[in-house]
Length: 461
Image (cartoon, rainbow, N blue to C red; front, side):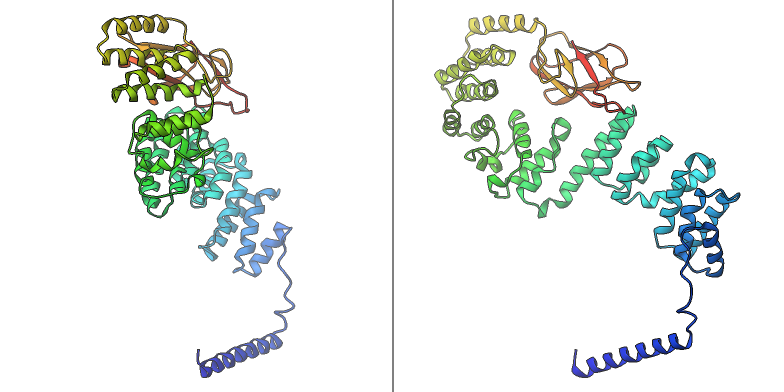
């Protein structure tokens, strides 16, 4: 700004202030004008009649009218809201006052007034913070999940809130739709924002536990992480979830996770060793195993089975057998026997394969042992068991132990793929048609707690 323009600006400002002062001195009644009332609805109504452009007072009347005992308080509530909306159509205050009053006096209103409250609330609910605070009260008043889904902001947080409302209150069809909506929203948001994100930010898009429904997102994360170098100590715990799922399901390439192999205390050691094997670095995997110094720990068995397969595929039968023996020393389980049979078939040892297969069938016939539950074969969150499928389908029987009028809802996963689901109103058997072989079954209880916060429980047979 030049000197001349600055002087002109200051001169105009001084002239404006002088004119304003002159107007105030010649119209002193403006200074003596009483402030509007705020505590008495009748006085506020008289003020608004004398000051018909005061939209703030109109909003206050709309907020307070239904709290009074005036004979025509509902008409006053409507009139004040209409006035505020007409005077300040772009301001949310009037709608917020009208909606707040309507919700507090919901049971005093007729059907048409309730509909009007919901119509006025709809634009307000597009705001995430407002939606978070009002979604549950609105559900308790209306039980209209369709309305809430229609007016909710298009965010993952809103969808998660709606999903929880649905499942806790027994709206299981809505739950299934929202479960898929959340996955679509997360993948779309990933594609829209991933170009500007770091590797640690990318893995934060997943929400464990992961299953096959999350696989498209997991694949995209793996692809993008491979293009972005990162410091291992900057990666949070969800990187282990992504890497673990990728290793178990042979997704790749895992080159983006290679820095984690040499990073101690970032992800757990058995997973570091499995990543090393997946990337063709058996020596690095062996170093991790030796440095851990834990012999016979169950968490190392999946790695030992991976190592047995890897060494057999590379012609190292002695190393493969050594890994199998160490896994069997921890426990002779269905996965251990399945890999033992697989390697016997690979080396065309028919007698050994037949002998191990008989052991496998005999072990599979024993009662299943479910781990991760909250009691003997009881599920409060999730529980796991290994099963062997041959020719007959696998039957999973589930019964309710503790619930309320809303039944437990469970999802049954086979190798992380959703295979069956449903509510448990009475003892129910899920039949799973699975390919021949050993499978990891997971039973998840979706609505873990009742509306009163009591833990739901189911029993798995």
